[in-house]
Length: 468
Ligand SMILES: [Zn+2]
Ligand SMILES: [Zn+2]
Image (cartoon, rainbow, N blue to C red; front, top):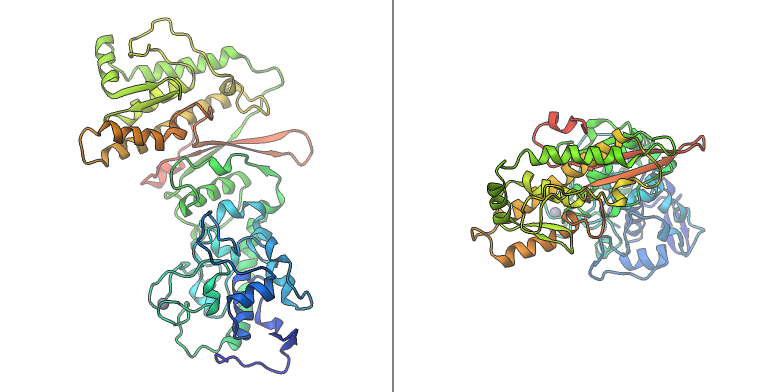
């Protein structure tokens, strides 16, 4: 039986062999389930039907997560035989039990991620699925998502066909963690208990995710690129939550901050009735003056420059760049249209007395409460920086085309792809800007934060720069 020695203490109930010493307190559901299957020389149908009381589902994955994902423990809850000691233990350290509903914004199930030293003793923590965590808290090793022998992709973190031969590479047939065929599974499994402490400490650092009543309503649409749902998106979400909740996770366990830079700022609240439209109009006007100063002073030059590169879609409230130009200039136009501070007519002719008509959603941001003008100014400026990030994506897209300048079809396609980021039609704020809040434990009011995605930056000093 795969080198497995079943001793007299092994529990046999309902015809299933199990021994509680094979798993440890901090172990996630993946290896727990794998061990039941290995010990009983069974397959993924057994794992589904007998252990989890669900039908196997190996159909093409259409959504972000596999229908039998192991990231989320609640569906695992209905084992056919609760008499088994392993029934409740399977979901006990699933990721949603450690980080609450944030699991779907922090982790991916496309591949099993593991520390080689841990997995060679049959231990994998659900924490390894968190995209932002890059190293094992016990061994300090980089987590892997490929077979350590042949480099083939590791299986999904889900109960699929790979459970016909759990923890074994489907490509080379060796254990994923290496060690050849002679691994003594049962003996090694018991050694996994030594890794619990390090994983428990990391879970403790993450516990504010579970206990705080933090609300981030638009977390799902916050990431403004096509890369939504990817590991990079999840690292960025993690960095926001880490900053807001003050999670004290050792930096050396995490993905480098330069990869997914975010900036988080606490928002100051204003007394009720302390918000005046006048102050916000003045801020908007000041930012607009700043932006217009970068344009040619002569009106004919300015009109020629803008009309050669841009078109305005008045219905979608979107500024379309048809030819490569300065992304900063593009962002200025997006922002002025967004903030009702558009100083031109439809042909980019200067309108001397153009009034600022700040849309109500922006004027009253963040809506749930009133904030000081200084905080609102930081928000307005963050919107400009987020629009600049979108404009840079746009211009990278334009540059990627072979034809110079791009054809109408190409820039139309780009404007469709980036519509949500650059148009104020559906959401008034740029997608790269988010608001989070938390009820104070004393019951008196809210704490509020503004978070913004930053562009990939090369120097850490840039990443640390304040919101201004
Ligand atoms: Zn490890
Ligand atoms: Zn392999």
